[in-house]
Amino acid sequence: MGAELRKGAGEIDGLARVEEALDRIVADDIGLAVTHLRCGCFFSNLLFELDAIRSGTVTVLLPTDEPFAWVAPAGIAMVAASLLLRTGWSGRRVQAVHGPEDLSWDDALAVVGDVLGRTVTAHRVGGDDMRATLTDAGMSRARAEAIIGMSAGLHEGFVPEQPRTPVTTTDTTLGAWAWAELRPALKSAG
View 1 (cartoon, rainbow, N blue to C red):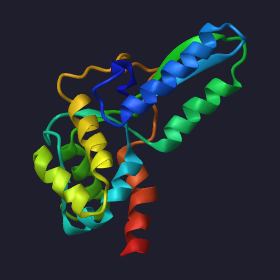
View 2: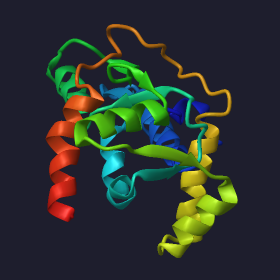
View 3: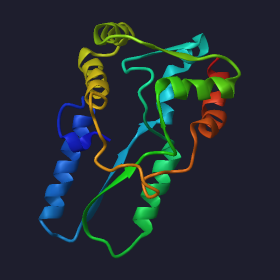
């Protein structure tokens, strides 16, 4: 989600450029069809936070109580596969993939904590602190800015182009994903 803004969503602006390029090809009417999947925050992004989860505190840029869409990568794959297997469609379409429910960072980390049997909380920091954390960890300044821009662009009044409906909602819960994917990752990395 966020590519519909076309600019102002940090690293997602690159996805907007890809959408625009594909749309130009479809507009040339050479028989191609495209569906742009607009997905919520991937559960698998939590795999980048293993040390923070282990410590009990995950540092975030967003208000910790602001809900947003989260989705399992397998849910995205299921939507993509089902679309690829359908015949008889053409042109340009957009399909949101929201996951089963919107969760704030507080909600998501409470689920993670329940699965792990320990408390995991979110700690909100400002952009300057996050920028320093990311660049101190070896990330380029441009990449850090792209991440900070994504968080700011997608949460300061952002409303997804497609609302949550039965069509945009996938089944895998964060708890199920955390049990199957995050818990083993923490054990093998720890």
